[in-house]
Length: 139
Image (cartoon, rainbow, N blue to C red; front, side, top):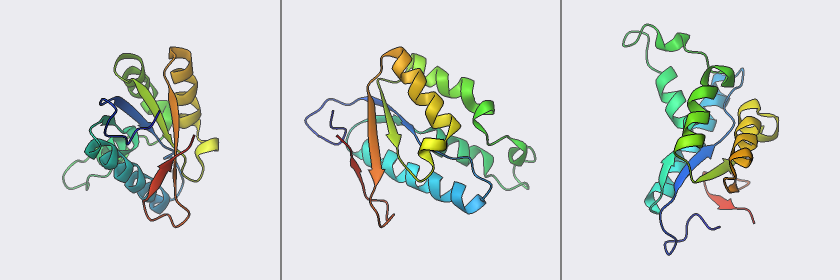
């Protein structure tokens, strides 16, 4: 399955990527890369839900604008029911963005297992070695 082919019909793509880390800068970088790939897929004609992009935006409001936003947990246990609902009721494809740490990610591991249980196709995506935001699909 080629996600960027313009000849393919649009798909509802759930874009999984690792997020949780003790470092704010790692979380920000992961959210940026997920957002970049999500936009590429959208520009290719797909409909994309990126829980990392969505969740990062919700948890990053300044305290002056949202006093409870910085208290929202950033771990998968908090977000799991939301994520699984999108996989179960909306997604046609799970695309996994293989950023550093993806294999150890509790969330990505659970999302892959849930997609496989549901019979959804799983497509692996990887950022190039320069980490510039360019990415490619693995066969």
